[in-house]
Length: 159
Image (cartoon, rainbow, N blue to C red; front, top):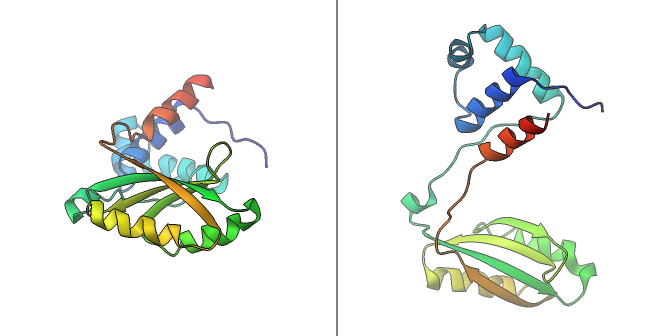
């Protein structure tokens, strides 16, 4: 698939949608002094090119009582068990991100819990998965950076 050529208008549209995926095209058009139809066409082209896929909401888990964030490095007995372990981890809803990695860990996960006791029970579930040799846990004291716009701005500066 050929790489789609994006311009500053595309950049601004993406930045606004990253900020709030529910921003109406008419609002974007007014801010950029273009028609809503132009916004629609440009978004559709980016969707067709696979640059934009779906949309999402940002959930404030703290307001739902899930204030504890931990990162878990998982060591496997055998790397051939990776997919099996990933499949079992995917059954644990508190694991919100899992990456197969190189380096120290075979799998690196982010999990959310209500408190340390809750996190401990989740970690024990992961430890009990067949193929997991051991885990290392890092507790997040604060999520300091979680900004999806910074990367898109950097990408457009490169263009």
